[in-house]
Length: 485
Ligand SMILES: Cc1cc2nc3c(=O)[nH]c(=O)nc-3n(C[C@H](O)[C@H](O)[C@H](O)COP(=O)(O)OP(=O)(O)OC[C@H]3O[C@@H](n4cnc5c(N)ncnc54)[C@H](O)[C@@H]3O)c2cc1C
Image (cartoon, rainbow, N blue to C red; front, side, top):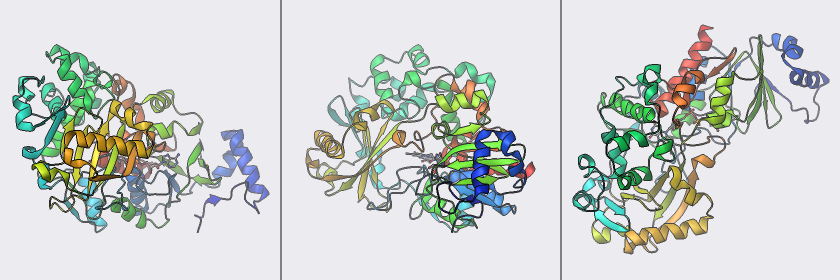
């Protein structure tokens, strides 16, 4: 059943003349439609996006007795939480690890009756059996640490390159997880390449550190301040001991349970394309032709998706500029069914760091029994380009060729089941916000504050912890702003 405030599309049969006039007035400008909104001033709060931020905002508003309508462009709840339910073992292709320090997320799980289980408890994750494949040579981590051609600085030589960066940038000048937005640190909002060179890191080592940097396409496009922030985030999380976990049955169960707890189900397949506001209310237009009136609005759209929405009146210049320019993480995942556990032939593990096209491989071993039904190749940043233009058959051939180069026993041992490229998903624009140099100083303060009746939430507006907890925290913050207004 359509929500009570859904207006019929002007194209739909039986549409009344009054609705047509309201629609026309809306496009003529705020003054023209103000009287019609006035009558709806106490309408529901509209929430754009049924990811964790939107659903957290909606639940909190509903708890306080407010009527809420969530509008979601996709056919699936959860946004960047996405469990691949049809694949064996249900691997995650979006947000995965729920830390013990995620107090708001854990409180939601408890309220909704969801259980958590330790993530990454597979025996295959041990360093002793992990494989490094660098410049065409395969080695164990122990061999890599002692290798003459390992160009990493002495302090990090025994680490796979993806774990070396934070160590090289220590000590962290941020005294707390919230300090990254403090203008006092804006001198750190610069490309990471310079400070690494100043510390004597060779060009060969920089090339390895660049391979799967998760916080910029390249180190030149990664701000040092963001790397210090991610490290401060980790330090904060380590204060609450305990394993990182995921929801039993898949993290997707969390947004599903949140949506099920709403009195009005989210309206799916409703991509918002325009938002208008005046002193008395908001009016939203979706691409399915529906229009929705509300008293206020919570917008949780990732910035690249926000940039595609027309706002009347226009958003403040700094916020619009952030939406147009903000960098987002490029992440490609290749989900591979294990037909034969090819790694057992040589006693290694399918836990790989490489400078080749697959970059890293992780076993998806939810059961923790060492028999993963799938593996995930995880490619970050500039390396995603190699995969973006390939059709599935070509990608599958490249996967096999690469695996066979590393494990000769891998021929015919895996099947490519699913590919995700977050940066190609127009509703996300990327995996997470990856501030480019200068962007934290220029944009971070502009993302959170309300603009009239519009309130902003989502991972990118987080102020303390990152990721899943930032999304939940931001949704609850936006709801609190509305309740206090
Ligand atoms: C590969 C990957 C791994 C990750 N790993 C972790 C991890 O281990 N731990 C962690 O804490 N975090 C992790 N994250 C981050 C975490 O998943 C996200 O920060 C969080 O889910 C973001 O929630 P959100 O509600 O802010 O945004 P989203 O989940 O993106 O929700 C926004 C919603 O808006 C919808 N939308 C977009 N445009 C429109 C429109 N025009 N109209 C209506 N709806 C629209 C989208 O479809 C989406 O559902 C990971 C993310 C990815 C992609």
